[in-house]
Length: 442
Image (cartoon, rainbow, N blue to C red; front, side, top):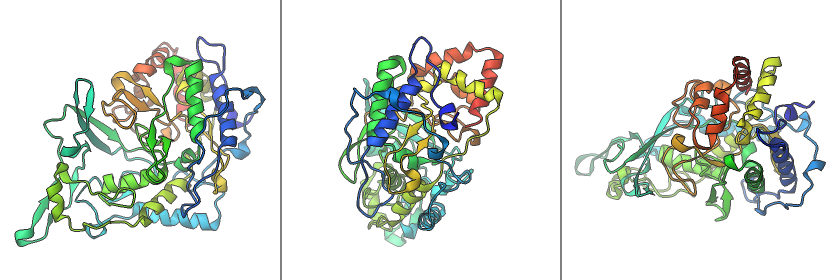
């Protein structure tokens, strides 16, 4: 039996007589096959679909067979490029990795306030992973209305600054931001791994929309909601899929956002500097007030992420294979969708491929596990389903890193994740050990 199917859909959910994983699987195959192409400008690695229409309700899903291993995307090594890239694409990956690892300086436009001077500072251990570096979000909730306190530097706090600039009368000292006293919501978020994100970028919007419909129909108590956000480059409404709130629709936009908000480097899609603590007057002393990056570095970072392979899977044995069945039976796969499919792409290694991120990339009401921050259509209780691939390479879990083991992360689930958490708590010792062994293969 092919591995892509074996670790994907299969068991029915508790209390149902359908196979939600199989239904999601087959719908996603069809939507991937029907998905249309990508932008025609310089960014040949762009995977943005031009058609956002949802698939027909009348499709016969039973006619679609599971994929074989030949279409399952695989990396060369953890932190390495996608398998099957030609020399030109490998060169683009390498050039992108150079930008990813490069430390920006004040002369490059770093700051005046920022979080780190290099992408790799947060996304390593191994290359493209996460160090578990925590960042701070803040805002104010008044009567159920969230205010990101933009005028005070919110909602993302930049905890580094470039310090003293200029001399004499024109001298000025930039200092790191602090959470203002007006904030009554504060949240920590760890940086997310970048493995396999080019594949996620290549999943058609309509596949996520179809998956949301399927979840709503067959297991409404855990159904997810897409975060519909604006793609800056085109002005189109897209399905968000990146970030803890699925607030970013494409890798290219994710790249430009990171350059501005994490490093303070302005770029074509994000041309306005972040005023320190919201103080616009302080920007009068900005040593590099012009556009810091013409888009070249943003494009290269996007290339690196697009071509970075997914994490390899560990070998299954009898116990972990059983654990995969337990994973589905207690409802984990309702949100942590095992298998998705890409649509067409100019990069052959990304085109019509199966990926196994173990996420639906939709928003779910996580109750007390929500971080209180509102972004796009995501409210304070909603979080994007965290992908589980690469889990075995991580040491901290959940959005704020509070959990240091997968078991602790499961036990912290609330809201729509509470039922699966409770079923996990009722498992026998052997079943629980099998489930945890399965997670360590991811």
